[in-house]
Figure: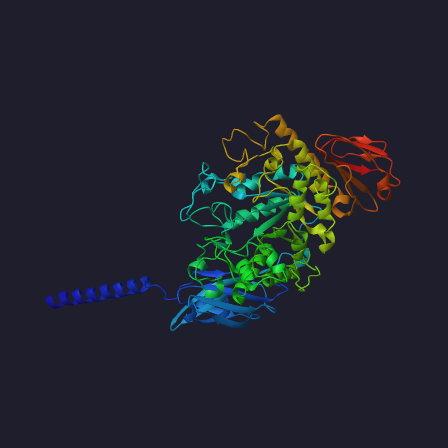
Length: 635
C-alpha cells in the first residue's frame, strides 16, 4: 500500500514536471523577431522588375534568408519559382536586412521569407499581387484641371471617434492653433460633392501619413511612417475609399510627398540602419534655404552643403539619398502609393532641398513606370530663371535634367499679387510685373505644366493678401484661371476666410461647417454673409466655366505690352479664341481701342462673357471697369 502511494506520488511529480516543461517551452519566445517588412507587399509585371525589401527586427542580420513558395500541408513550403535573389545586404546596424529580388519571371501569389538562426526558423508571408491596370493607364492631372487644396486636420471632422488615439502623442484641441483639430479623410470624403460643385476637378491633400510627433504635428510634414495613414485621419482603407469615391465623381487625387526630411520620432530615425541615412553634423545645422545655390555656377561648396544637407528644422532630420538603400526605399514608397491607391498625381514638398540627382532619379523612375502620370514640385523662388532650372528638359548649363514635369509657379504668384496691389506706371510696376514674368516663359521647357496659385498652406490667406478687396480677389482669380498652367485654390478662400495674423496655425484655420456644432456652415451656406455667398457663387461660376473651356486647357498664349494700366492676353486654338482684358487702374474705367490686337481679333465681331452671361456686340471699343479682369469668348 505504501509502495503504491509512493509510486503514485512519483508519477504525479513526473507529470507535473513534464507539464511545467511543456508550458515553459510554449511560453519561450522564438529568438527570431520581425518588427517591420517594407514594402509589405508588391506587384508582378512592373517595368522595373527589381524589388528591395527592408526587414527590421532584433539582430535580424544574424539570420540566413531564403525565399520559398506557398505553405503546403505538414508545415512544408513550395518552391518560389520565378523569384531570383540578387543579393542580401547587411549594414552596420544588425537590426536590418535588405533583400534584393528580381521579379522578372515571377507570378502573382503568396510567398514566404524564411529566416533561420541555428535551429530556429520563422516564416513571413509576402504577397506579390497582380496589377489592376498597366502603367500607361494611370492618368495624371493636367492643364485641364483646377486643383482644390485641403489640409486634412482643418477641413472636416468625419469621424470624431478617431480624434484621440492611444499611443499617439497629440490629441485634438481646437482651441489651440498649433494642435490637432480632428479633421480626417472621412470628412473630406463626405464633402466631395461640395468640391465638385465648386467646379474643381482635382484634390491636392497635404500629407496624411503618420506624424506621431510630440508637438506641432497636424500639418503632416514630419512623417514617422511612410506606409501608414495617421490613425487620427483614418486608415489606409479609408484613403482607398476616398480615392475610389473621388474617382466615381470624376475628381482626381494628388498626394503630397515629402522626400527631404522626416520626423525625429520616425521609427528608423530612432534606430538608424546606417549613419549615412541622414545628414550628420557635429552640431545642429540648419539649411540656408537658398534655392539659388544648386543653380549657381559660382556657388561655394560651403553654401551647397548648407542648402542641401542642412536640416529644415530641429525636429526634422534631413535624409541623405546618396545612400543607395534609402534612395530605393523612397522611390519604391512613391510607386507603392501610386500603384496601390491609383492616385492621379504627386506634389513634392521642398523639391530643391534634397540632393538634386536623387530627385531627378525619383521623377524619372516613377514616370517610366507611369508615362501618363504627373508630378509637380514645390520650388519656392520668385525668379523665373531659378524656378525653370527645376523643370525637365530645360537647357541648363550644367546639363542637369530634373525629369520634373512642372513646378509651383511662385514667380506668377508673387508678381500677380504685387501687380494687382500696386498702381500701374506701365513700365516697372502693376501689370508690368506680371507681363515681364510671362515674357520669360521661354526659360521653361513647358510653362503650361506649372501650378498657379494665389495662396496655399504656407502663405497668407487670399483675402488678407488683397486687403479684403473683393474686386481685387475676383480679378486675381480670373487671371490664374486663364493663364497658361493650371490653377490651385486653397480651401476656405471661396468664403473669404481672412486670417491676417502671420501664424501658420491660425492661417490654417478650420473650414466653417466642418465640425458638428459650428455656427457657420460654408457647405450649406448657413450663417454666411451676403458678401461670402456672392463670392462663393462667383468661384463656382468661374471654375465650372473653366472645367469645360478647352481653349484654356489646350490653347496657345499670346500677350501684349501693358498700356495705360491695361494688360491684354489671348488663349487660342484653331477653333476658338478667348480674350482676357485686365484694367488694373485703382479707380478709373478704361475704354480700350482694340486695333493693336488685330492679329488675334480679325474676323470676330462679338464677345461673350461666360461669367456674367453678357454679350459685347462691338469689339472695336471695349469699356472695362477699374480693377477688373474681363473674360471674352470671341464669336
